[in-house]
Amino acid sequence: EVFFRNQYLSRADMWQLMKSLEETVVYEGQVLKYLGSAIAEVENIWISGERKESAYVTHPYTKPIFRSRSARYAILIEVSREMLEGWSHGELMYERLIDGLLHELFQRWERDKARHLASVILYGRAAGADGAAKRDSHNHQHGEDFYILLVSEVTSITWADILNKIRRAFNDLTLSRSVCLAAESNILEAIHLTAMDFADDQNDAHLMSTGTSIIAVTAGTGLFNADHTLLKQTTDLLVGNSIGVDIVALSPKPLHPVPLFRYD
Image (cartoon, rainbow, N blue to C red; front, side, top):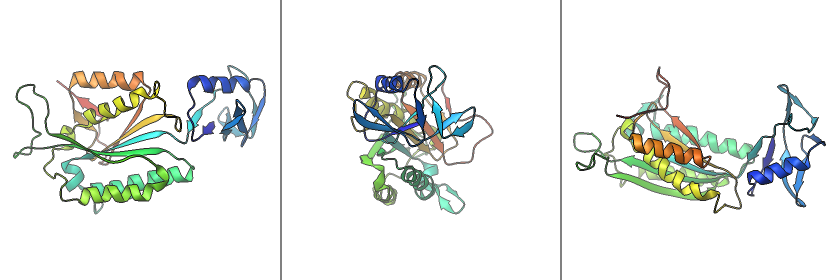
């Protein structure tokens, strides 16, 4: 396992780096140099499931795993009825999100000495008087979607300030409380818009980070109503640009596989 931080490494750079290590011995803690500069460090070496202190690098038996400690993360937080009104173990769902999930995530990054660039976006869908998600009668698409950018590409070491901004946003009286259920939320649209922002990473690379990932948080169980066309477009966009997505559900896991996108 090779870890690196605060720089952009393309797949070609990774290949060239491993090519320079061919038929040499590597050891834990070794600093790897490429083009005269120290760019990475060997942290873990595994042989047949057992951790070793050193190993001999030979192609194709050596499988390098590059891990970036300075990736770009987009944290999408759903504003739904379950998030605002649901509770678990005496805590509201958004309190559990802030003081539990996100607090533990940022602390884990800090322990691993990661310096990820985090963006936090609130997303939601307004509901009508009957509690159902509003729809446009002409094209049968959902309407009244909203997106609120709280922080944009802020280093993860300022995680305390990030959590305070999220807490203030949920306690803000101007935040709409008339929202739909989690299953009717615009999570797919939020993922698609975020992926479009990351799609140009290969052409217009961010030179201080490597890798992009999306964390979408929902207060539901992981079942969503979706448009089939948008689902296919989003899937192609994510796969074509190697963008990872983690959907985190705060509610207990149901008996069926999730996440599950349901469409007509």
